[in-house]
Length: 98
Image (cartoon, rainbow, N blue to C red):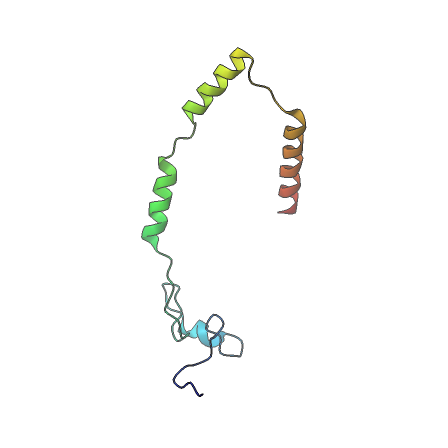
């Protein structure tokens, strides 16, 4: 059985060579034409919407702070020092690797 009219898939629009052909086809919006796939754009609207949602979140979670204060006053709050030390070391190592 022979299937006609279909082309093999391409990797990111590169048809062999160095990819310079696609750089020539890149327009100012960051899309690449001629790659065989629909252009992909980064939507400024979506990014601005995400940023506004993040900015709308409070810097301090007042409800969580109040809950922890109450637990500390009542003596219910304890710190797992081994868990805390482990987390601090993991974070420090992660920063060094980055």
